[in-house]
Image (cartoon, rainbow, N blue to C red; front, side):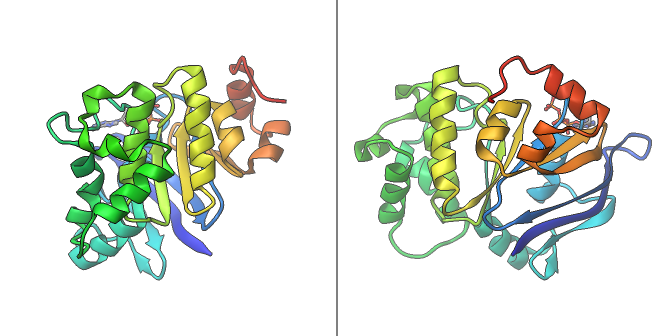
Length: 248
Ligand SMILES: Nc1ncnc2c1ncn2[C@@H]1O[C@H](COP(=O)(O)OP(=O)(O)OP(=O)(O)O)[C@@H](O)[C@H]1O
């Protein structure tokens, strides 16, 4: 089932500076997708559009039967319930003045989900592998990997269909990164992940499909295993050659 489709999406921060050209790909339920490309290729810009923080200047983004429309509050409420995000830096993405309970419950408040939020927060903290008493502490009491678990708990607390993960493991050391990748893999039994990453090894471990972006254009997309085994585009070959540690 298609969750979101990007159809010939174009975007420019100004009329002179077009950063996305004719970008098309599909996010289907149950199929994790890795969005890969060098710095400046437009990955974060695509996430910005998918979060409704900007509108495409051409083409369209379709969510179910409707076009993503950041100006439509009712639509955005349903959309935000379905699509949540995890960002790169677990130090700056959590408000240091709020207890973990309040941080994780934030989407439930923003989405005006009625009833007690306690149970959902406790389920989320359990799902990310932290002890339930973590909810009474502050972010500075946790390591980088634990903070990223808190950020992931916040993203899953409203049980979304899709998680947008922007370099969500890049800032972590290697062993912590592997554990968070395992966590995301386990969560993807229940929800789909769009992972933006420089790290092809992480994409290979987590994503069934891959979209390769070069200078705002999709140069190759398809099954990760096929593309990494047999990259057709010179840019993909170059990206692969620049990765020192590829899994077999
Ligand atoms: N707010 C902005 N105003 C103007 N130009 C921007 C803005 N944000 C990004 N850009 C430009 O858009 C292009 C794509 O940037 P984007 O951040 O989407 O790339 P990226 O692939 O996510 O890079 P990175 O991996 O370094 O985060 C770049 O040329 C960048 O300089």
